[in-house]
Each structure stands twice: as C-alpha cells, then as structure tokens.
Image (tube, rainbow over all chains, first blue to last red; front, top):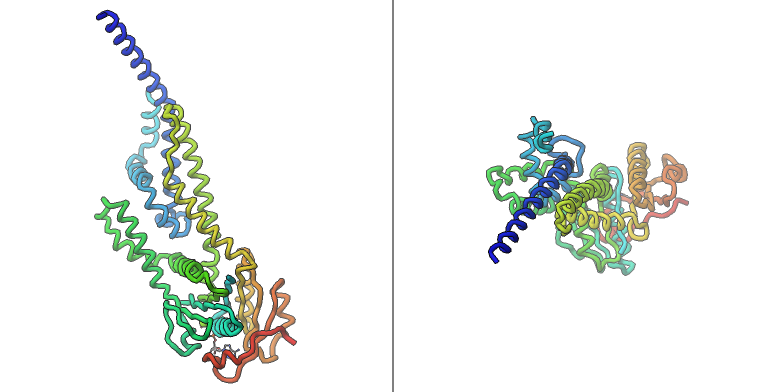
Length: 98
Length: 294
Ligand SMILES: Nc1ncnc2c1ncn2[C@@H]1O[C@H](COP(=O)(O)OP(=O)(O)OP(=O)(O)O)[C@@H](O)[C@H]1O
Ligand SMILES: [Mg+2]
C-alpha cells in the first residue's frame, strides 16, 4: 500500500518534471512571437497616437476614441521607452543561452 | 428624408438660397428643418428673429435652427475627458483637465464638431421630409464632408493591423494549449463599432437619392473658381452635386450656358437679383425659386 503510494507520487513527480520541461520549451518557442506581438502593439499605439507625437496620423477624434480602450498598450509603450536603448539586449535575454 | 447642403464662396447667397428653398418646400406641404451649421450664422438676419439650437417654427411645416458648434466641441471633449478619467485614473497627476482644455484648439476638432452636430440633427429629426443645411466656409465644409471617408480609411488600416496582432496571439495561446478561449479584444471591438458608425454616415452622404449638394455662385471669376473646387472635391467624395445656382444673375457676364460645362452632370439654375433686401418670410415666400436659364 505504502509502496504503491510512493510509486504513484514518484510518477506524478516525473510527470510534473516533463510538463515543466515542455512549458519551458513552449515558452522559448513563443518568446519570439511574444516579442514580435509586443513590438507590433507598440507600433499600433504609435499609429493611433501619431498626431500627438507628430507622425502621419488618423484624425484626432479617432485617437481620442481609441485611447480609452488601449490602457494596456499605452503602459506597455511607456515601459518600452525605458528599455528602448537596449533592444538587442532585451531580445537576446528572451532567446536565452545559445 | 432628403438632405440638402447649400455651399459656395462667402457672401454668394448660400443662406438666402437655403432659406428660400426651405420656405418654398414648407409651403408646398413638406415638413422641413433648416439648420445653419455655419459658425457665422445669418439665418436670424434673413428671418429677422433670434434663433438658437432650439428649433423655431417659422411657418407651418418649417423649423429653423442655428447650431452652436462650441456647444458640440465642449460636449464632446467633456465626454472624452470623463472616459479618459475612468480609465487612466492613476494619471491624475498628469492633469488631464488642462490637456483637454487645450485640445479644443487642436486641428480637426472643429470639423468633428460639425459632423457630430449633423449626425445628431439627422437622428433627432427623422420625421422631416427635408433637412437643409446652410454650410460653413468652404474649407471647413469640405473637411467635415470628407471626415467619414478619411476616418474609414484609417479605421480599416488599424483593424487589419490589429487582426494581425490577434492572429499571432492566437498562435501563442494554442502553443500554450490554452484551449484558445478567444477573448474579445476591446480595441478591435471599438474600431469595428466606429467603422459601422462612419459607414452609416458615409452611405447616407453618398446615396444620391437622399443627399444632394447645391453650389451657389455669382457671376465672377473668384466664386466660379471656388465653386469648381467644391464641385471636384465633393464629387470625388462620391457625394452628388445636383444643382449649381447662379445667384443675383442680371444677364451680364458669362452666359449661364458657358458655366454649364464646368459642372458636368448637374443642373444649372439662375436666380435674379431681387430689388432691395432679400429678407423676411414674406419677401422669401413671394420670391421666385431658381430656374433654368431661358
Ligand atoms: N438673389 C438675391 N437678390 C438680392 N439680394 C440677394 C440675393 N441673394 C443674396 N442676396 C443678398 O446678398 C447678401 C449675402 O447673401 P447671404 O447672406 O445669403 O450669403 P451667404 O453666402 O450666406 O454669406 P456668408 O458666406 O456670409 O454666410 C445678403 O445681403 C442677401 O440679402
Ligand atoms: Mg450665410
């Protein structure tokens, strides 16, 4: 009885280990896409806010109507301003060790 | 419901002609709303009585409004400010209020206010047979007429870009086996909502059974040049110019027939110069409508 329980626990532990490994691999695989998504979102925010920062831009009323639903993107854009100097570093960190 | 816009260079007789048309349609038994969306109103001078946002019944079947664009700018900015405050609450330090105060002078706000005012009029007075707009100066009129189309161009670009982002997010979600519970994207939802809104306005403006533009001009080269600009721009937007009215015509200058070739596909009408002031309901009622040249 005790032995059976021990085996079950061990097997579960092994399963967790492999699931963890898979998750790590998945994270690695999606890391690049995540990064790309983030950059695309930043470009999207810049497009919407164009008139505020002097780029070709949609009419102001569109900017004003879209910004209230873009809280996350705007914060992300502000944050990325602080890391913008080290984009390469950010990228290699995400890709992990070769 | 039919929508008529009277346009033309300053002082050519837009207000007079829109009032004249309104008076005649109403006396023909139609329900008519005449709305001045020109910030420099002169319908009150033409009808010789104070006018405001509140429709005034001037004759049976004829209501007249002078839209206060400042009210619309203020209302719009206040709504937006409230929405921003709800979302970016932690940005109090940012002093949004001051920022919105400045926005009122931002380019593009004025034509948006005209569009809002127009949208509101069309929605509120659906029971009318005719809604006639006395328009602001040419530059502003062309901008606000173009706004739905320009907005749509941008919105469609933004929508397709947003969809690309969402597609990528979907891939990531699938790799993580998050059983792809496709959660709604508020940004795309708002974009689509706006697309619907501007498509509705744009469809209405470009439906020649419903909307027509009438250009008023005098027999001089400056008002002709500006009228040609209006004709070209409005036609490019897909909005129908139905008539060109040669106002205060006294038989001198270019023959009306010569003018016709500048405005292909429209009907050229002339209106003689009246003796004395062309104001007051009685004068307008007895004044003839523009007619084809003889
Ligand atoms: N057919 C006409 N006969 C006589 N007077 C006219 C005629 N049409 C317009 N007027 C007069 O010309 C002047 C300008 O007309 P009106 O105010 O209608 O022009 P408008 O295009 O609306 O000007 P604004 O650009 O300032 O709004 C007015 O004094 C008006 O009474
Ligand atoms: Mg006028």
